Image 1: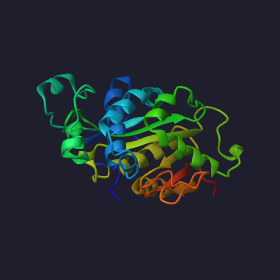
Image 2: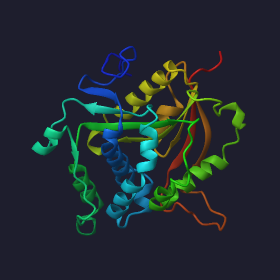
Image 3: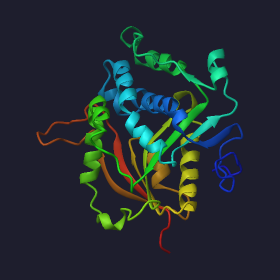
Length: 285
């Protein structure tokens, strides 16, 4: 694991391990379109679950999720505990993007090319329209400021299995709520949305940002972070945090074997272990 020597973070006393070209910044409302596009694109085109569940009309679903996700992503950005990795050496594709500091060119009126050229080609087309230096995000919100589930309705409709996935993990969570839930703000952080742009995958951005966030949350007084993982790499990073933190597997299920009340494999044809992990930032000796 690389040493934490990069001080380009919101807190220079908490450096991180990524190369000098990368910088961690707190996300603000101005970053919402970029963060939204990264989360939607990463999940719907490159997740081990969602593109296999919804292979048809994926571009239409991506635009629907982009619009429906505003409440959830903004709830997290407004928490002040959502961060992103920016590439300070990013090469803009368009002069217009460079002048604006970055721009998203998605247009739901544009016809996709998935039906004629395939899912991979459509994913690359939308990726090319993401011309901005934000390359990885870690969105989170304070557990003492819960989501309004009524406002989550449009996103649940755009990605129907999203709510089911969280419900299954919740029903398998056997903890006493008093053992972990917060009594005030600044105690427990809920992580929701870990995504890296496809053209930056494999560079350790997710892991570097995650471990930095653990230390930053600890320094700010939080005692724990909870995250749902739909990816083996994400589960590995959060379930095996650096010392002195402790990763606890709260609940899990496998999409290839889970059956609903009628005996149907609701997540077929996917095959992915899904977990809920709690990171204890202040474990007792």
